[in-house]
Length: 81
Image (cartoon, rainbow, N blue to C red; front, side, top):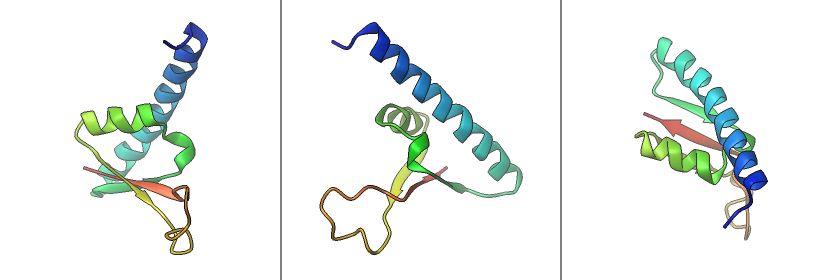
């Protein structure tokens, strides 16, 4: 079980990420777009899970240099609807 402090931090991180992503999605949809690219710093496992539960597709993007590297981190995430 996680501590109350950890739970609060995770909740804050998820909320901050979702608020930022919501503003990007709103802007994109008004332009007729169907996807956005988001830096990994705005997405946690919790945020990705929430977005998927809302019906969004979330896919990591790796640069061609990172494909073969073990433990490579995504350059960004593509979120589509």
